[in-house]
Length: 286
Length: 265
Image (cartoon, rainbow over all chains, first blue to last red; front, side, top):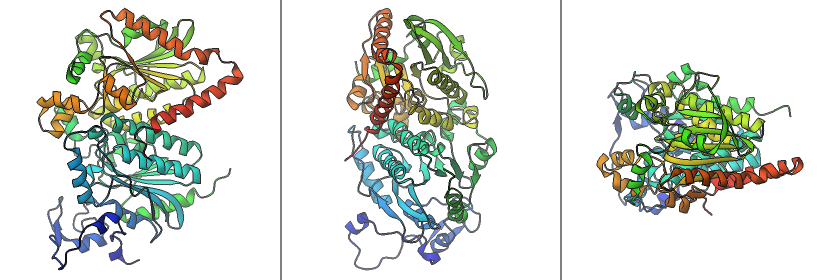
């Protein structure tokens, strides 16, 4: 697979709905400025470096489709429940507009993409959360899609690999969002009780109700370097204790040190790492 | 009463807390301490008691009464060791075939450096995960504030009941107002939008029963006592061989109950 194909998006129905401009337009941003070292980085260059700044090693946020291309064997990903999308169950003000905007910005229908694929030849179920969709927040449909994926994986005795990025439960769906934590946890438990593997990969940021449920329920939990992982966000904690937090607090390196994750794996190594884990779990004694 | 009035009532000074419910509904309560990992979180009260003539495990998120006790209880906001202490007692309940009754009253799991460094998210996640398949009946009663994940960590239950002036929400109305409208003063509006009152929760399928509050809480305690006896009766009366079948059905129903929240066809 050519490196330049790594970040190419697979076909997406939402995109085809949009009218293509007749004349080719010049991209707004040929290069972006790195939020960490402020150096200008060519987008093409960024694509080849797995979305990692070539100068300082900063991890740019990347979308669900780009991640799937990075992790799944070429052409192996088959999406599940692609049409599911949120409505506004509590008629929460401004939520409809927010959903519309999120769909446009992310070109996705929800904050998670689920399906099955192969990684290094090993079949698995895969979910990848989408940071551009209301901060990867979990409403009913996110919960539903992940629950369905675990139920499917239980039925087919497949391991689940999941990439998390989330601001937590989506408050516009109120208690229905909160209860998704219990719903997904239940599906994870039954998947686990049936003897199946679940590998969680925590990316920046993973917080709130997602941390307090399926992000922390993996048999193996790894994180990307520097990823913020916590229950309460750092701002909330600072407001509660009225103190500045130490710089590495709630970062992946801190969680590794305190014993809450199994390892930190760089983006470029993740596919090989996961393939190896799947291989190590490919044959049990029973 | 508007939604925000109920929020205020749920937080009102002098409102009975978890220990009051425990004291007035059960007898022979023996408190158990500690999570065997880190320490003893006083925001969680846990132990064994008699419900009429049968033993049950009782767990409560306790806010405390006077200021001194409130500080000692961390105002009912538990650290990870509190949730782990609760889970330890729940596992013992499963071992000895005791039903579990939880009293939920918390603004939320504590947000602090220590809580985070000891794995607040992991502790809550573990409770949700384990409670779903715990082979003993669980009843959770919301008696005041039901603040987000910190409340849910004691509420993956077969039956969730709520007092008529208690609430249960994904986020505090203050938090919601300040995030969405950058204005913490819009709490009234946020309280309405979040659909956090007992009636809304019943309608949304988040709770199974509303327990009407009376002027005199003695009536509320009595009511809860009889409701618990009534609900748990079949588990006590069942013969050994029927019991496993009953518990299998109970677990299936517990999963389905949460499964259907936000289910789409």
